[in-house]
Amino acid sequence: LQHYFIQSNLRLSNMPNIKLQSSDGETFDVDIAIAKQSGTISTMLEDLGVDEEDDDPVPLPNVSAMILKKVITWCKHHKDDPPKPEDEENMEKRTDDIDSWDQDFLKVDQGTLFELILAANYLDIKGLLDVTCKTVANMIKGKKAEEIRKTFNIKNDFTPEEEEQIRKENEWCEDP
Image (cartoon, helix red, strand yellow):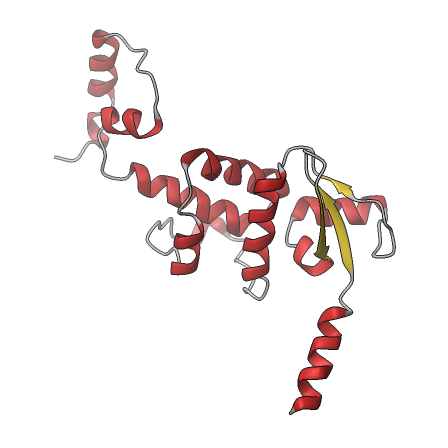
């Protein structure tokens, strides 16, 4: 048994790493399999022919160090997740299926949550994009327009007449 754990640890420590550089210049040494959860990084590595021995960091100009650290944490936690089905047409659009780890992970301020959405989109990490967007959807669900504006600090720039016109046009989607 002890031999097994030593072998496992050796395999883990021998995993090839890649350097990722955030927009603010911080460099992160990341297991290449973890980094390849990002479609963007995966494509960069293939297109540029970058390999594990390459010491130059992969620049990620749209992601700050704080957010990149969180993205890496999320990717490490989800490294063994099965791939999501590609057929989105047949997928249910649910927002109540966020696992407890992700719920705790996403208990962050709104600014951080929106930066995670932007990073997940830029890095093409579908699972992270899905769970962050579902979190925002849950923040909106069941709220009136004014409550949503208050939650997200959105200024109402409609006149009362314009607002009434929009309400009339969209009566069909209101709860009875």
